[in-house]
Amino acid sequence: MAETIWDIGDGVILQGTFTNRSDTNTDPTQVTIEVEAPDATLTSEAGTVAVPGNLTNPSVGVWEYVFSPTQAGRHHWRATGSASPEASAPGSFVVRVKRAVFVA
Image (cartoon, rainbow, N blue to C red; front, side, top):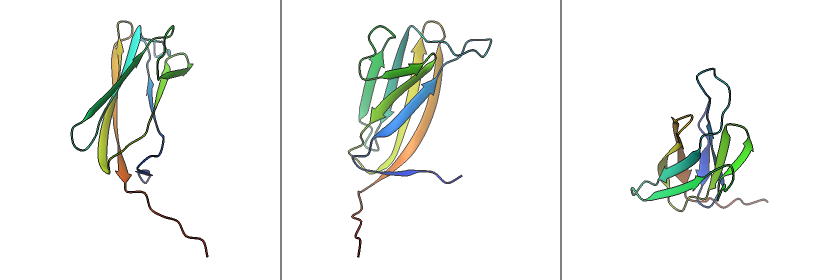
């Protein structure tokens, strides 16, 4: 499967799924999603079920953050849960300079 390449300014949906030892989706006490840009700049967002902040919790154990990149290159991200369950889901994605689309 080919990797999706995003443009600067696109809304990249980063999703972390958390499960317990029985492999059942479970919400951690707090979720933090961190994104490292190519220049090592860190963006961090945190939330809870009661106060999700800029994160969304569309279903039990599933947390999402829409990140709008401002730099081209490979970005690395991680979703981390605190307390029960503690887990970490890493990933990466590539961003390019936005291309113009011309229709004749």
